[in-house]
Image (cartoon, rainbow, N blue to C red):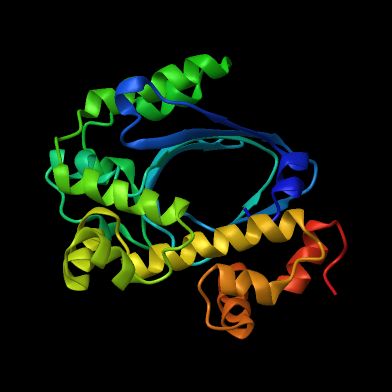
Length: 267
């Protein structure tokens, strides 16, 4: 999220855990309800994850879509009332569901949003069943039931991709694809093929995106952040490269983002 504090002040946002058998594939569920007097522009810096999104806007019918990995800043204007129940898959975690239903690589979904029925034809009335309950626990149970009903394939390649992406996320020392490949004893090209098939983006993109998320977290919590130092810690050759990537991803340069996160108006 570009400005999590602002979002949380406007909508009711929660993260919930999935059922145990789904945890190798699912990062978490995310639930949003809102009742707004004025429109609100929500902006999110996507993770390298596929999302399954059940939504209802105002008095419209319930719907659902599969959102591939988003390459740029995702923006949506929320108005009136609405509800969203989303599933954020782990990087690589969506692939076992995709192959089970005869689809190809996760890269085919990258940067796209498809109706869920185009990916899982037997969706039935799942959007209504997920979105209708007033009780949050009941919505979580419906999400569990829907995913368990899809029955993910056993997919060792996807599990490996998930493990590697987690390593990138948690080991700040990994700043180049060559490091990851060398640690695995494989070629860079092999990693590129694995990530395209199972994650939907290149390993280089995953490394850069996780570093931008680190920069966002630090910027939000440290107004006087030393950007040159952080650039070096995140593997950038200099501060200018971090500023360029940050601005291209977030839509604001780092110093302006710090002002916004602190509650000041953009200058």
